[in-house]
Length: 389
Image (cartoon, rainbow, N blue to C red; front, side, top):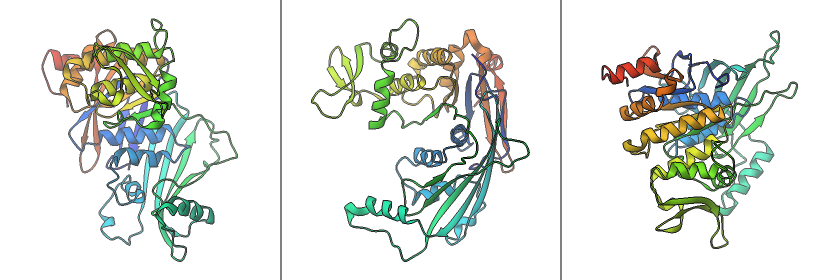
């Protein structure tokens, strides 16, 4: 691989993470640890770090976690991204928080200082108009006579282009409790902004494809993946046949002239929508098509074993490692499964030095990290049978 997007990442103050450092990352990195040790939080922090000039990534990040929209408001979701000390037991408390991200590698951004504060104020006329348009269908309208509560997130970003004698210009996201979907964003205009690192985070629910993903998949199905395949479709079909040998092809189509959807050409079922197949096949399609969009970037996978039977884990990871190498994609993934750890280890036998495992342990004072290189992981598992989780 070429130079990695991230060689080192440090996170402090994000959710429950305290002074966490992932040092000497490799092309393939596996995060293990007990429940609530902070593994998913690490991936979320990296997703923000990858898109520092787009504060809307905060909203995308909390939507991924609150998949069923159980939180009262998005402001509440954002507030809990910062370390808490019990202040929020008072509903009138005006909370302020802060977290820091630092990194080095091929990515030009070197650090982000993020400040959160609760705010009280009045939205602009433009915001009021937009909110009223959203509510017009139900006959509800925004109340102009009262002050609104909301949140403001400020990014102070340091990158390779930042002069040492000048403080960075802040990026600002402002969102009101009344508004579940978006906020107000401002960008610095006095200097050129580096390109965000290509990145995507896949959660255990990501394989439940939505309409926008279908459009993206239609492009990736035609994109060449490996030299031995003429298109990405052939590579994806080759992978999904590991789960169902009767799969013959996969395409984006509209059989009745309606909205396009993903169809699998199946030897027994004919052209069948992807939704009728199991989680493993849908997960494989998502992995295969996503990795093609991230050349030189980072793929973040939460619970990488989700939906994949233990018997197919090694085959999937062999394919995934090959694809990541082909597109120069750095992978950072979490798992609770010892079978998944073994499958990854076995799939990397000829590139074991590229595999790094990080065991994360959350204490009251800090987030401890134990780095386990691939060779050591192989010995611990195959020679001593030790549980590294």
